[in-house]
Structures are given as structure tokens and as C-alpha cells.
Length: 72
Image (tube, rainbow, N blue to C red; front, top):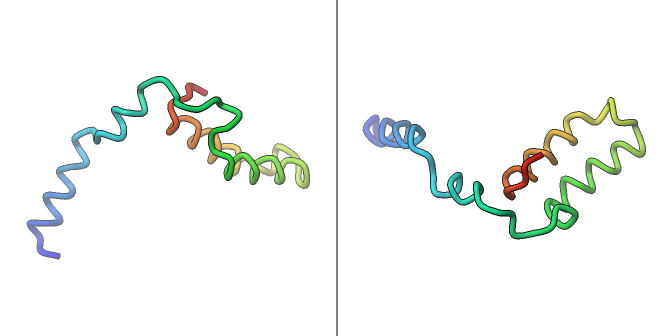
């Protein structure tokens, strides 16, 4: 990768991507059906270890829900 390519990709980070703009719209799924993978990991961790020990999975699920367009 040349220095010019690295510089171009770094500059593109300043501009919002189309994906970011698209997530600002209304969610396409119901919240109970969104992010099943992170939901399962979060729930299993809470059952086995308690909520305070699972902040990593809780935050991952919240980020996933926000990426789907939910305001949580």
C-alpha cells in the first residue's frame, strides 16, 4: 500500500458513510428480533454470572441495536 492510498483512506473517515446515514432511519425489525447473536450471549452471561459481570456483552448488544436503528 502506498502512502497516497493510506492518506486517501484516512481522509474518507472524515466523511459520514452511507451506512451511517441509513441507520438514522426507522428500524426494519422489531427490537425483540434484532441482533439475536449478541442477545443470546448477553442473556446467557447474565444468567450464569449476573448482570454486573456482563457489561461487555450488554454494551455489545446495545451497539448492535443502535446499528439497526434503535434508540437505546
